[in-house]
Amino acid sequence: MKGGLIEAATAECTRRMAARLDELNIPATVDLHDDGVHSWGYWQDDLHRSWPVIGGAIGAL
Figure (cartoon, rainbow, N blue to C red):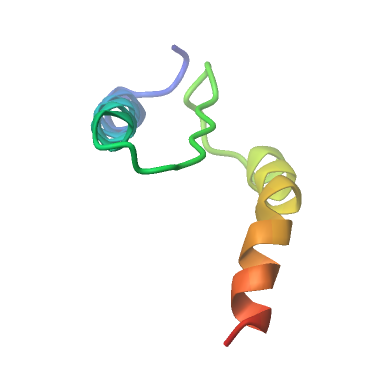
């Protein structure tokens, strides 16, 4: 993993949360990047992938 200690720790927390949600049969989409580095490119790509869900939730308000 290229990211620093904070990225490694938050990735581990996210993996643990995803595992627990799976144990409880709670559906969730978790998309972790292997390098663990925050960048605008990743943020933009993830926003485009998640927009159908986010936009649908906003539209439902």
